[in-house]
Length: 326
Image (cartoon, rainbow, N blue to C red; front, side, top):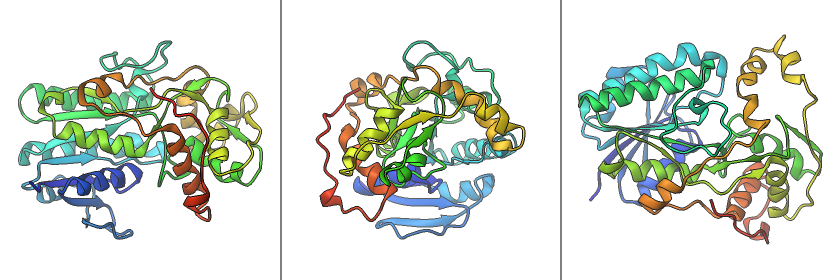
Protein backbone atom coordinates (compact mmCIF):
# COMPACT_ATOMS: atom_id res chain seq x y z
CA UNK A 1 0.00 0.00 0.00
CA UNK A 2 1.33 3.43 -0.94
CA UNK A 3 2.12 5.66 2.04
CA UNK A 4 3.39 9.21 2.32
CA UNK A 5 6.98 9.64 3.52
CA UNK A 6 8.70 13.01 3.97
CA UNK A 7 12.48 13.09 3.57
CA UNK A 8 14.12 16.32 4.72
CA UNK A 9 17.60 16.85 3.32
CA UNK A 10 18.35 16.24 -0.36
CA UNK A 11 22.00 15.25 -0.02
CA UNK A 12 23.34 11.75 -0.76
CA UNK A 13 21.55 10.09 2.17
CA UNK A 14 18.27 11.89 1.54
CA UNK A 15 18.30 10.95 -2.14
CA UNK A 16 19.20 7.34 -1.35
CA UNK A 17 16.33 7.17 1.13
CA UNK A 18 13.91 8.68 -1.39
CA UNK A 19 14.98 6.14 -4.04
CA UNK A 20 14.42 3.28 -1.60
CA UNK A 21 10.96 4.52 -0.67
CA UNK A 22 9.93 4.97 -4.31
CA UNK A 23 11.13 1.45 -5.06
CA UNK A 24 8.83 0.22 -2.30
CA UNK A 25 5.90 1.97 -3.96
CA UNK A 26 5.51 4.91 -1.58
CA UNK A 27 4.72 8.57 -2.16
CA UNK A 28 7.78 10.66 -1.35
CA UNK A 29 8.31 14.34 -0.65
CA UNK A 30 11.99 15.30 -0.78
CA UNK A 31 12.54 18.55 1.07
CA UNK A 32 15.44 20.99 0.81
CA UNK A 33 15.86 24.70 1.46
CA UNK A 34 15.45 25.62 -2.21
CA UNK A 35 13.36 22.69 -3.39
CA UNK A 36 15.55 22.64 -6.49
CA UNK A 37 17.58 19.81 -7.93
CA UNK A 38 17.43 17.14 -10.62
CA UNK A 39 14.14 15.35 -11.14
CA UNK A 40 13.93 12.01 -9.39
CA UNK A 41 11.29 9.64 -10.75
CA UNK A 42 8.41 9.28 -8.32
CA UNK A 43 9.69 12.02 -6.00
CA UNK A 44 8.03 15.38 -5.40
CA UNK A 45 10.45 18.12 -4.40
CA UNK A 46 9.43 20.71 -1.80
CA UNK A 47 11.13 23.82 -0.41
CA UNK A 48 11.35 24.42 3.33
CA UNK A 49 13.60 25.72 6.05
CA UNK A 50 14.27 22.71 8.27
CA UNK A 51 14.09 24.98 11.31
CA UNK A 52 10.52 26.02 10.45
CA UNK A 53 8.41 23.69 12.60
CA UNK A 54 5.10 24.89 11.14
CA UNK A 55 6.29 24.18 7.60
CA UNK A 56 7.49 20.69 8.56
CA UNK A 57 4.13 20.02 10.21
CA UNK A 58 2.40 21.10 7.00
CA UNK A 59 4.58 18.85 4.85
CA UNK A 60 4.30 15.85 7.20
CA UNK A 61 0.53 15.99 7.66
CA UNK A 62 -0.71 12.47 6.93
CA UNK A 63 2.81 11.07 6.59
CA UNK A 64 3.87 7.72 7.99
CA UNK A 65 7.37 8.98 8.72
CA UNK A 66 9.51 12.08 8.56
CA UNK A 67 13.24 11.54 7.97
CA UNK A 68 15.92 13.90 9.25
CA UNK A 69 18.61 13.50 6.58
CA UNK A 70 19.92 17.03 7.02
CA UNK A 71 23.71 17.22 7.18
CA UNK A 72 25.37 20.66 7.21
CA UNK A 73 28.94 20.10 6.04
CA UNK A 74 30.21 23.30 7.65
CA UNK A 75 31.02 22.22 11.20
CA UNK A 76 31.34 25.83 12.35
CA UNK A 77 27.57 26.38 12.10
CA UNK A 78 26.53 23.31 14.10
CA UNK A 79 26.05 25.07 17.49
CA UNK A 80 23.56 27.54 16.03
CA UNK A 81 22.13 25.38 13.23
CA UNK A 82 21.15 22.17 14.99
CA UNK A 83 19.12 23.24 18.07
CA UNK A 84 16.23 24.88 16.17
CA UNK A 85 16.30 22.23 13.44
CA UNK A 86 16.21 19.35 15.95
CA UNK A 87 13.33 21.01 17.80
CA UNK A 88 11.40 21.53 14.56
CA UNK A 89 11.58 17.81 13.78
CA UNK A 90 10.42 16.93 17.30
CA UNK A 91 7.48 19.30 16.99
CA UNK A 92 6.54 17.93 13.57
CA UNK A 93 6.67 14.35 14.84
CA UNK A 94 4.50 15.17 17.84
CA UNK A 95 1.88 17.18 15.98
CA UNK A 96 1.51 14.81 13.02
CA UNK A 97 2.18 11.40 14.58
CA UNK A 98 4.76 10.61 11.92
CA UNK A 99 7.66 8.46 13.07
CA UNK A 100 10.82 10.55 13.40
CA UNK A 101 13.66 8.70 11.68
CA UNK A 102 17.06 10.35 12.06
CA UNK A 103 20.21 9.73 10.04
CA UNK A 104 23.15 10.34 12.36
CA UNK A 105 26.83 9.65 12.90
CA UNK A 106 29.11 7.87 15.36
CA UNK A 107 30.52 11.01 16.98
CA UNK A 108 28.58 10.54 20.21
CA UNK A 109 30.52 7.44 21.22
CA UNK A 110 33.81 9.30 21.25
CA UNK A 111 37.20 7.53 21.19
CA UNK A 112 36.78 3.82 21.95
CA UNK A 113 39.13 0.87 21.73
CA UNK A 114 36.57 -1.72 20.58
CA UNK A 115 34.12 -1.97 17.69
CA UNK A 116 31.19 0.40 18.21
CA UNK A 117 27.89 -1.34 18.94
CA UNK A 118 24.43 -0.04 19.71
CA UNK A 119 23.90 0.60 23.39
CA UNK A 120 27.36 1.96 24.05
CA UNK A 121 27.13 5.20 26.03
CA UNK A 122 27.32 8.52 24.22
CA UNK A 123 30.30 9.53 26.30
CA UNK A 124 32.13 11.95 23.99
CA UNK A 125 32.79 15.39 25.46
CA UNK A 126 33.62 17.31 22.28
CA UNK A 127 31.31 20.01 20.94
CA UNK A 128 29.97 18.32 17.81
CA UNK A 129 29.56 14.99 19.60
CA UNK A 130 27.56 16.57 22.42
CA UNK A 131 25.25 18.24 19.89
CA UNK A 132 24.40 15.01 18.07
CA UNK A 133 24.21 12.93 21.25
CA UNK A 134 21.95 15.54 22.83
CA UNK A 135 19.60 15.41 19.84
CA UNK A 136 19.10 11.67 20.28
CA UNK A 137 18.80 11.94 24.07
CA UNK A 138 15.94 14.43 23.71
CA UNK A 139 14.20 12.42 21.00
CA UNK A 140 14.48 9.25 23.08
CA UNK A 141 13.14 11.04 26.17
CA UNK A 142 10.08 12.23 24.26
CA UNK A 143 9.65 8.76 22.76
CA UNK A 144 9.71 7.16 26.19
CA UNK A 145 7.24 9.78 27.45
CA UNK A 146 4.85 8.74 24.69
CA UNK A 147 4.94 12.12 22.98
CA UNK A 148 6.56 10.92 19.74
CA UNK A 149 7.83 7.77 18.06
CA UNK A 150 11.52 8.04 17.22
CA UNK A 151 14.39 5.93 15.96
CA UNK A 152 17.97 6.77 14.91
CA UNK A 153 20.36 5.14 12.45
CA UNK A 154 24.09 5.83 12.64
CA UNK A 155 26.63 5.26 9.90
CA UNK A 156 30.34 5.76 9.41
CA UNK A 157 32.14 7.77 6.70
CA UNK A 158 30.13 7.68 3.48
CA UNK A 159 31.09 6.19 0.17
CA UNK A 160 28.99 5.39 -2.88
CA UNK A 161 26.92 7.35 -5.39
CA UNK A 162 26.42 11.07 -4.94
CA UNK A 163 28.86 11.48 -2.05
CA UNK A 164 30.56 14.84 -2.44
CA UNK A 165 34.04 15.90 -1.43
CA UNK A 166 32.47 17.64 1.58
CA UNK A 167 30.61 14.52 2.69
CA UNK A 168 33.22 11.77 2.42
CA UNK A 169 36.94 11.42 3.10
CA UNK A 170 37.49 8.91 0.29
CA UNK A 171 35.34 11.00 -2.05
CA UNK A 172 37.63 13.96 -1.31
CA UNK A 173 40.75 12.23 -2.62
CA UNK A 174 39.23 9.87 -5.22
CA UNK A 175 39.36 12.29 -8.19
CA UNK A 176 43.09 12.89 -7.74
CA UNK A 177 43.79 9.19 -7.10
CA UNK A 178 41.94 8.21 -10.28
CA UNK A 179 44.06 10.74 -12.13
CA UNK A 180 47.16 8.88 -10.96
CA UNK A 181 48.22 11.41 -8.36
CA UNK A 182 49.48 10.60 -4.86
CA UNK A 183 47.02 11.70 -2.18
CA UNK A 184 47.08 12.64 1.49
CA UNK A 185 44.41 11.61 3.95
CA UNK A 186 43.49 12.74 7.44
CA UNK A 187 45.28 10.84 10.20
CA UNK A 188 46.97 7.51 9.53
CA UNK A 189 46.35 5.71 6.24
CA UNK A 190 47.19 2.31 7.76
CA UNK A 191 44.59 1.79 10.53
CA UNK A 192 41.23 0.01 10.08
CA UNK A 193 38.27 2.28 9.39
CA UNK A 194 34.61 1.57 8.59
CA UNK A 195 32.96 3.07 5.52
CA UNK A 196 29.17 3.05 5.00
CA UNK A 197 27.58 3.12 1.55
CA UNK A 198 24.90 5.83 1.40
CA UNK A 199 22.51 3.34 -0.21
CA UNK A 200 22.82 1.11 2.85
CA UNK A 201 22.09 4.09 5.08
CA UNK A 202 18.95 4.77 3.06
CA UNK A 203 17.85 1.14 3.24
CA UNK A 204 18.35 1.11 7.00
CA UNK A 205 16.33 4.30 7.52
CA UNK A 206 13.43 2.93 5.49
CA UNK A 207 13.58 -0.46 7.24
CA UNK A 208 13.42 0.91 10.78
CA UNK A 209 10.65 3.33 9.86
CA UNK A 210 8.48 0.33 8.96
CA UNK A 211 9.41 -1.81 12.00
CA UNK A 212 7.78 -0.67 15.28
CA UNK A 213 9.95 -3.05 17.27
CA UNK A 214 12.99 -0.97 16.32
CA UNK A 215 11.66 2.37 17.58
CA UNK A 216 13.16 4.03 20.64
CA UNK A 217 16.63 2.69 19.83
CA UNK A 218 19.81 3.48 17.93
CA UNK A 219 20.75 1.21 15.03
CA UNK A 220 23.85 0.97 12.89
CA UNK A 221 23.51 0.93 9.12
CA UNK A 222 24.76 -2.26 7.47
CA UNK A 223 28.44 -1.67 6.81
CA UNK A 224 31.24 -3.76 5.33
CA UNK A 225 34.20 -4.87 7.40
CA UNK A 226 36.81 -2.16 8.01
CA UNK A 227 39.68 -1.40 5.65
CA UNK A 228 42.49 1.11 5.92
CA UNK A 229 42.19 4.41 4.09
CA UNK A 230 45.09 3.32 1.88
CA UNK A 231 43.24 0.11 0.98
CA UNK A 232 40.00 1.96 0.30
CA UNK A 233 41.74 4.33 -2.11
CA UNK A 234 43.53 1.44 -3.80
CA UNK A 235 40.30 -0.52 -4.19
CA UNK A 236 38.53 2.47 -5.74
CA UNK A 237 41.41 2.83 -8.21
CA UNK A 238 41.31 -0.87 -9.10
CA UNK A 239 37.51 -0.69 -9.52
CA UNK A 240 38.13 1.88 -12.24
CA UNK A 241 40.88 -0.16 -13.87
CA UNK A 242 43.56 2.19 -12.56
CA UNK A 243 46.75 1.43 -10.69
CA UNK A 244 46.73 2.27 -6.96
CA UNK A 245 48.52 5.44 -5.98
CA UNK A 246 50.61 6.40 -2.97
CA UNK A 247 48.52 7.35 0.07
CA UNK A 248 50.11 9.29 2.90
CA UNK A 249 48.85 11.09 5.98
CA UNK A 250 49.25 14.81 6.41
CA UNK A 251 52.40 15.80 8.32
CA UNK A 252 51.96 15.80 12.06
CA UNK A 253 50.61 19.09 13.33
CA UNK A 254 49.02 20.13 10.02
CA UNK A 255 45.54 20.44 11.49
CA UNK A 256 46.80 22.32 14.52
CA UNK A 257 48.73 24.78 12.36
CA UNK A 258 45.92 25.20 9.82
CA UNK A 259 43.44 25.71 12.62
CA UNK A 260 45.21 28.89 13.61
CA UNK A 261 43.97 30.47 10.39
CA UNK A 262 41.02 28.39 9.15
CA UNK A 263 38.00 27.80 11.41
CA UNK A 264 36.89 24.63 9.62
CA UNK A 265 40.30 23.06 10.22
CA UNK A 266 39.98 23.84 13.92
CA UNK A 267 36.70 21.95 13.94
CA UNK A 268 38.28 18.93 12.23
CA UNK A 269 40.69 18.51 15.12
CA UNK A 270 37.77 17.20 17.20
CA UNK A 271 37.37 14.24 14.87
CA UNK A 272 41.03 13.59 14.10
CA UNK A 273 41.09 10.69 16.56
CA UNK A 274 38.81 8.76 14.21
CA UNK A 275 41.71 8.44 11.78
CA UNK A 276 44.53 7.94 14.26
CA UNK A 277 43.23 4.67 15.73
CA UNK A 278 40.93 1.85 14.58
CA UNK A 279 37.42 3.20 13.98
CA UNK A 280 35.16 0.21 13.52
CA UNK A 281 31.36 0.04 13.31
CA UNK A 282 29.62 -3.24 14.17
CA UNK A 283 26.36 -3.57 12.21
CA UNK A 284 25.55 -7.16 13.15
CA UNK A 285 22.40 -6.17 15.08
CA UNK A 286 20.53 -4.76 12.08
CA UNK A 287 21.79 -7.61 9.92
CA UNK A 288 20.58 -10.18 12.43
CA UNK A 289 17.28 -8.58 13.41
CA UNK A 290 16.15 -6.99 10.12
CA UNK A 291 18.04 -9.11 7.61
CA UNK A 292 19.90 -6.19 6.05
CA UNK A 293 23.37 -6.75 4.63
CA UNK A 294 25.85 -4.20 3.25
CA UNK A 295 26.31 -3.56 -0.43
CA UNK A 296 29.25 -5.72 -1.60
CA UNK A 297 32.51 -3.85 -1.17
CA UNK A 298 33.49 -4.09 -4.82
CA UNK A 299 30.20 -2.43 -5.78
CA UNK A 300 30.78 0.31 -3.19
CA UNK A 301 34.15 1.00 -4.80
CA UNK A 302 32.74 0.95 -8.34
CA UNK A 303 30.05 3.45 -7.39
CA UNK A 304 32.61 5.66 -5.65
CA UNK A 305 34.86 5.61 -8.71
CA UNK A 306 31.99 6.49 -11.05
CA UNK A 307 30.95 9.27 -8.72
CA UNK A 308 34.49 10.71 -8.69
CA UNK A 309 34.93 10.49 -12.45
CA UNK A 310 31.62 10.54 -14.36
CA UNK A 311 33.47 10.05 -17.65
CA UNK A 312 34.09 6.45 -16.71
CA UNK A 313 31.72 4.05 -18.41
CA UNK A 314 29.91 1.72 -16.05
CA UNK A 315 30.62 -1.20 -18.34
CA UNK A 316 34.36 -0.66 -18.04
CA UNK A 317 34.40 -0.21 -14.29
CA UNK A 318 34.91 -3.79 -13.28
CA UNK A 319 36.55 -4.97 -10.11
CA UNK A 320 38.13 -8.31 -9.26
CA UNK A 321 37.91 -7.41 -5.58
CA UNK A 322 36.77 -10.04 -3.18
CA UNK A 323 33.67 -8.89 -1.31
CA UNK A 324 34.27 -8.12 2.36
CA UNK A 325 31.39 -8.69 4.71
CA UNK A 326 30.86 -7.01 8.04
